[in-house]
Length: 178
Image 1 (cartoon, rainbow, N blue to C red):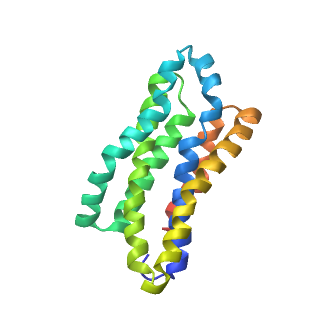
Image 2: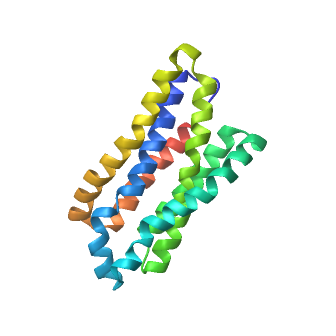
């Protein structure tokens, strides 16, 4: 990404964060449907979000260290591939165990955040850094809002599996651009 405009880099990395946060919150409107489809308790359904967050928390320092060793861009690309595999698996989950494994794999996408911050810090001129970080940080909230709104509409129209599958093409496009 070093040969591209810093603002283009910011837009692409911001889009990956928006997409990842969408993936985090998209299933929340479907919890009742998942409970019914998999015949699980409400307590068990809490693992759908928890598995995602725990795997992201564990993967973040590991990915950060690997990005220091192998390079930030290479790690963003690798993590995005893992994320795409996780969301694809989620779209084809037939039981709660497979869904939770998919969410763990998908949660690794959270580890992109600090790496992306580092890329933005390196790319933007010092006098524009605060603006860039502000724009980038706003993608966290935007992704959550989009996840709840779009996720709810997709679930109502096509079912909860479609929320996962709606992310795959966009994630692949972002991967190719990066």
